[in-house]
Image 1: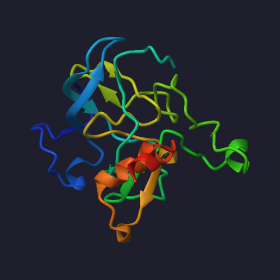
Image 2: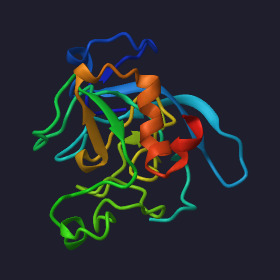
Image 3: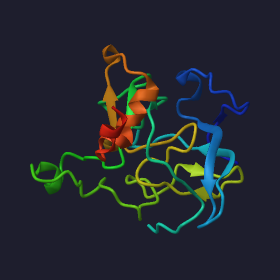
Length: 188
């Protein structure tokens, strides 16, 4: 595939962010190619984040998943509240902080980044950050697409945690879905 330099071609996740920043990353993901079909774990390409990033639900191929935690590998232009190495949790119900819904105290359903199972691409440029090894797009799911070793998120769909909280990535993953949906009380 022509374009940015590809990092992580050996399948290793032990790269420093400086080794992969701004490059297309090769990693494994569970890709769904159609309704009722099994997930296929395969190598994919994850393209670098664009400005302000850290249509049909039946569109395929698609990377599902909405629960995760991780470490920021790189950020796109305009992201000022996160940086490489930050510990984060993706949220499928993001907040832009500027729309009438975000400014209202009675709702948390952001106009731009709220839960939308029909959304399949990034908000900023309407493109996917995932592709097959031969360049065909793989679409996003619920602002998160977490069934992959690397993902790209709009910065409005990420919550940063400070290291002094001493929470493991495993435990933080519960916050990504369980707490936000009220299911966490079953796990205590």
